[in-house]
Length: 411
Image (cartoon, helix red, strand yellow):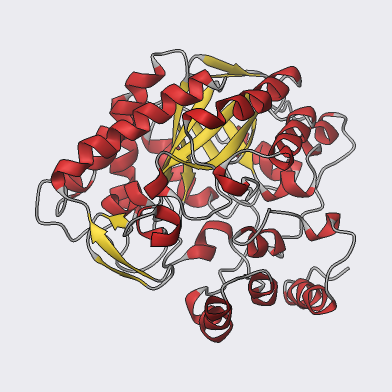
């Protein structure tokens, strides 16, 4: 009989998790006014009660200019009591608590950021849509210090770990990628230069963690399109982060402003996405150009596995595998290949107690069918699985059924 590692404890820097599962940092959209809500509390408590080793609050901006959405967490002093309420609940259920920190860079808008959005280089981001200003060199160290300040706030709020977001085409990733970094100073050009901003952000985070909080970094293995960062450069990014001493890497891929479905795979249900969208001009823009702007990327289970294996061969530090895990078979396959942890997002939205069900031996596969309704609505309101909703407009249910038929998943 296969001797699974899944329910064995494992160290993540100074923190020990009760098992090898992590609720991946996937934007919940449950923070109206950029502050935690009862919805956020209830969701993360349910995942912790469902048996996960660690649950991650997602996409917390380190400063106001780093916000993409008005229902996104912004890590600041006045929300600490609300966050402490959540971390206490997670700990009561026996799980560790992590928070993902980042800055969205050119994926903001002046209405959200309170200023012209900043990035590695100036230009126009059609996805926001907005003009973007390249950061001046004297702004980079103060921005990196915001990452350190965010870690100090996370400690006060009771978190055991922080995950620095250096992937998916957000600010740190915009410096790393040749697609978005056209600088001619010490922060552009060669990969060494493009990594410089990342290094100062991570150094600030590590110093603030003081050795008693785990520091993970989410990074791209590929940007997912021609002209972006490819795996050879990404391996060098991984080696650099290992030398800095981060406690684990979360291996992902994709670029929200160029290859969004490379991150999650499958099809974006555009009717569902535009149904919840405002303002009207954005709704109609996405209806007209959505298929072009958000191309379909075929889904297969464990879709990042082949790329992630290259990182496992090259690096010694702990690695977190994320991407398309819905069955016990693939989870065990990933752990057997030497990855210390597995992270899941959609699976634990569909079934917050999936981990306990696997432990009881009752379940080999969760009920998530990857139609991506949850992702389509999270840009406008809270993330939710369509299977949990009492009612859904007919046209949206029809769209979901069509996607399932295309994927050969119609029951």
